[in-house]
Image 1: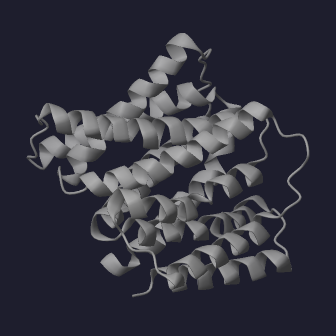
Image 2 (image 1 turned 135 degrees about the horizontal axis):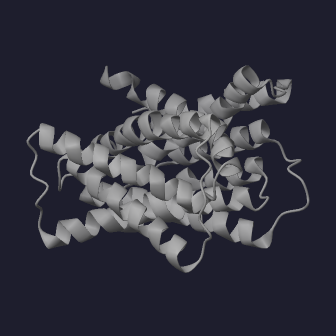
Length: 282
């Protein structure tokens, strides 16, 4: 079962791109994320209590987990949602975030003392080339500056949070860690709403379905698997599977949304798969 976790993660994480647009169309990005992580934090709290895990933790671990949640659920997701909401092409935003494995390779050497060999660099390069082919280079010329900045912030946030989580992965039970991370994300978006954003949510059927998907399949499912993979594997091997996400998202958009899928997309998916295999195999 554990061996298929990366496959399940890629499917669930990629599916989030399908339901992000309906959420943004029916709410402002920060209100949607605050609502999402309020429900997620409540869910992980109840699960922790049911599993008889103590949620009373030392102050140092509390701060570490909350700050990791601010990076993962606050700056990363907030940056991506906000950039798309102000007109950033989704393909370009996804491509920038896809740089995460390469940036993680660079930072994991000084921060985690992990050794990155030539094989992993070759795999990372092939993964990025394949992801670029899938997403395409024609992403439009009207790119909002704030959207570009927000996406770059999201890239840095998810990279640093992945490495930071690897350093802390043995500190707390997974449900308790996820609970405090969700609290951190919720708190971050509430602060954005109070001081910056103008919150609104249209609780339409479309919003409820899309939000339900992101809460149960992405936050409870994919994110928990990600935390498990970070705990069990090296940081660079874990994030290498992110290169499969743009390709998988493209296939989902073709299947569910009837979007175009070209031969170039198929070639890109093949190159990406080869790159991930090279980067992650022992």
